Length: 325
Image 1 (cartoon, rainbow, N blue to C red):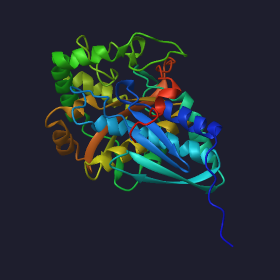
Image 2 (cartoon, rainbow, N blue to C red; image 1 turned 60 degrees about the vertical axis):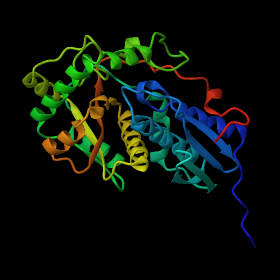
Image 3 (cartoon, rainbow, N blue to C red; image 1 turned 135 degrees about the horizontal axis):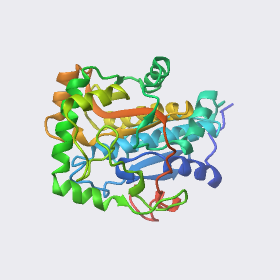
Image 4 (cartoon, rainbow, N blue to C red; image 1 turned 180 degrees about the vertical axis):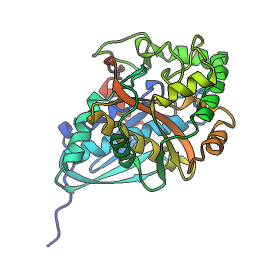
């Protein structure tokens, strides 16, 4: 007797997936993804028209963001009590094939319920570094084949590189104009749209400042190294540097970030220095990294609460009728 094929998703279940994807973090809160549902297959589409020519000239952070959305999508499928298989693509970022009923693990429930609580916290942390055991759990949550999360050593060298990056980005007029366009002047828990809320940006120096603006201060290397020593940092590295690696890195970091959220931590991501010519090669050389750096994740206990960033209406997650996949 042939087993019945997996049931297609209901409209209510599709809504669960859409809400989970919509809450993923993304570069400049650009939300560069769409969903296309075909029976038991869900395509995660990369919105290539979302361009950040100065910040992200090759679309690496855009794919990284899609990887974070993919983690949320997979968690939502599993919380609906279904198994799933994911394949990366070229015409699409990834396709999630939904399988038969499958019991949801306690870990998946915990990470799924952390989706709505996750915040980009561009402020100082409370009580310094996170305990070693918690840091190890976050590393384990993100580690997968081809992706490595590393606590950086040689903070003096990291401070030197970040200080240099701050000065370059602060003086780059094209970069500053683009950032201003993506700075949202809406705020609040129910705000709609995209972009980074003005009140979520920090006036402090890196690493606290998630985005470098014209007035971002640059402390000397010694002071910056001391500040880095008070933070908890992870560098996300991949074995290679292609589309699949960018997606996998984003998915891994989101698993780590949701694990941090479930443990009452907050975090933010630094990618902008990694786009400067030669910066990643220097980072690998100076810090002895085991692969290509894709992002720096800072995390800790919040000193003040952070409101969520605005989100596009859920209807905008789906291509218009007759649109391309």
